[in-house]
Length: 124
Image (cartoon, rainbow, N blue to C red):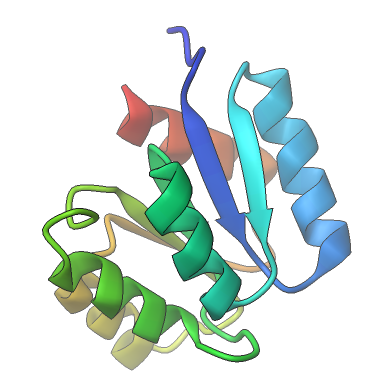
């Protein structure tokens, strides 16, 4: 499967993790953009219209649930697949993310191959 010309926005406040994910996705032929907080994520989503968003929950300025809710409430961004990537493992958080419209919920620590497989599946 080719992923060329598809853009993934990684929304994560830990620089080391964004660098690792960026390397992984670039190696699969994806374009990668980074946002370090919820406000920056919303700005980039509204201007770039990425093909998929990988979204952390615990972030400064606006948490991932707020970002997810805003994206799914807007007709312009409701169709963008959102994959949650978070350290929060509670059933309540997983259920809330799905109710708000997340297509996947991956908990940290994660296997890189799992993240890449799920991202590629939702981009195909």
